[in-house]
Image (cartoon, rainbow, N blue to C red; front, side, top):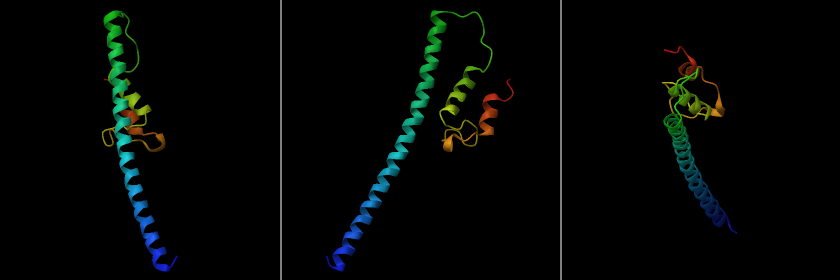
Length: 110
């Protein structure tokens, strides 16, 4: 191989690397959207199951603890998403704790 062929080959590999990198970025974005939608659907599914149980078997005792909306927020938080006002819906990097999210879920109960 002469110098020109080596240079051309290197340029071709560089372009292929850029293309692969762009494809990986797009796939990552799509995966994030799919994971977010999956978490939403799981919460909705759980809510529908609970509602169905309420209709089929009325419960007379009230469960202490979080309201259903806060339970949904807690589930999203445990799935790795922020539920605080500033960063709602974005991924928590390495599932780091967020005091603002925890305040939304476990803060004063009105």
